[in-house]
Structure formats: structure tokens, C-alpha cells
Image 1 (cartoon, rainbow, N blue to C red):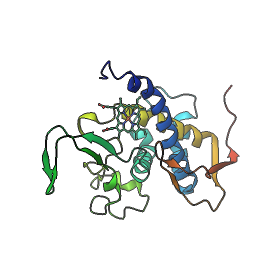
Image 2: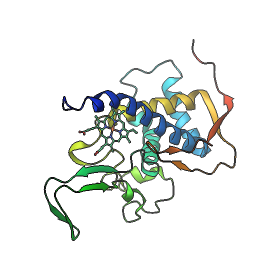
Image 3: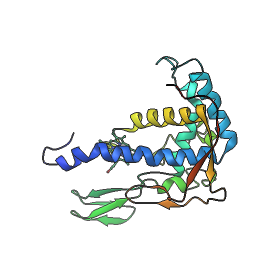
Image 4: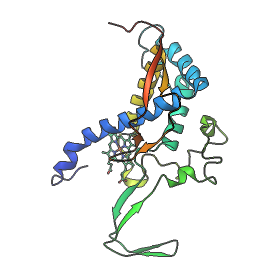
Amino acid sequence: MVPEANLRFALSAALIASVYLGDALSFAVYAMASQPALYDRIRSEADALFDNGDPDGEDFTLSSIDVTHRFLTECLRMYPIVPMSMRDVINSCVVEGYEIPVGARIFIAQTASHYMDDVFPDPFSFDIDRYLPPRNEHRSSGYAPYGLGTHRCLGSRWMELQLAVNVLMIAHYFTLEVSPENYKLRFSPLPSMKPSKKLKFHIAEQKRELPE
Ligand code: HEM
């Protein structure tokens, strides 16, 4: 998977992945805290799963986290952590009338389509029902938070699980509010996309004791 010569990549992958998880989670917590109706629906799923202790693997199914999963799918559409990829061209080709010469370095903004309304109608509205049949708006190459093709992210399934568990646990234990109340979402794009540092969260309520 990783050439021996590229040890730098191998050693930094785990570090980068943990940064991506934190970035994606900050957007998700922001989206949850700023949309109380969705927060309640996520909490209902969390309570059903965690009220009797940790769920078994069989209980933790896609249908048991349907809302949470669609919510996270929408978070990664609206707030992609890795909005573009780079490639060095080894075979010349023509794309949409543009000649791409051998050796060129190209930047592919694979998530630009996330805001194109022929792919995602009304793209600026946060709508988790996009992912219900018959709409299934994520089932096209226009949905690409994890890249496309041969080098699509190897960690995407792990990330989906980690994000879901973290968001569910937060909803189970806490009601968080965005602070300051009038915070307007701004992106901080480097080294990966995340909300600006001015975003803070305030614990408005702790729903239950944390386990020892
Ligand atoms: C929200 C979190 C993440 C996002 C948005 C993300 C996004 C991406 C994207 C867009 C690519 C393709 C890059 C390209 O085409 O040049 C990629 C590749 C990759 N990702 Fe992720 N990633 C995330 C988390 C992770 C995690 C947690 C891991 C490991 C546990 C991981 C492992 C990898 C690996 C190994 C590749 C390279 C695959 C290849 O070149 O064949 N990623 N990721």
C-alpha cells in the first residue's frame, strides 16, 4: 500500500487521520448544537442504544443509527475536511476540451460538486432527507468527501464508525450549545478544513452521570 521509500507518509498517516477525525467531529457537533430538532432525534437513537449499557455489535446496525448516519453524511457534504486532491499527470489526456500534458500537476476539487444544485438541489440547506430513497443524492460521483477512484480513502468506514459513536455519546450525555450564541460559522482551511477557533461549546445540561 505504501512504498518503502515513502516512510514519511506511513508515519504521518495516523497523525493526519486523528486530525481529520477531530476536524469532522467539530463540524458535526456544531451542526448538532445549532439544530436542536436534529439533536433530539440523534439523542433518541443514542438513548435507545446506550440506555442499557454498551450495545452489542448486533444492536449497532445502520437502521439503529439511521438519523445519525444521514446527519453525518450531510455534515461531510456541507463541510468536507479534504476538499481537493492533487495528481501528477503520467498520460496526457483531454478533459472537457482542456489538454492536460504529461508532467502537469493538477488540483482536483472533488467536493466542489457538493454545492452544485444539479447534484444536490438547494445545496446550502442542511437536509438529511437527501439520502433517503428515491433521492439517494449521495449515490453519485458528485458526493466525494473521501475522494474518488483507486485512491479513495482507506479509512472511511472506520471514520464513519468513530464519528457516529462520538456524536451519539455526546448526545446521550450532554446538551451542548454553540458559544458565543451569535457565532457565525467560518472555515479555517489549513492543514485541513475545520471551524474557526472562535467556535466554542457550552454544556447547557448534563443528562446523566458519566460511567466510572
Ligand atoms: C473525515 C476523515 C477523513 C477524510 C475526509 C479523508 C479523506 C481522504 C481523501 C479525500 C483521500 C484521497 C486523497 C487523494 O485522492 O489524493 C484519502 C486517502 C486516504 N485516507 Fe483518508 N480521510 C479521512 C480519514 C482517514 C482515516 C481515519 C484513515 C486511516 C485510518 C485514512 C486513511 C487514508 C489512506 C491510507 C488514504 C490513501 C489511499 C490511497 O492512496 O490509496 N483516512 N482520505
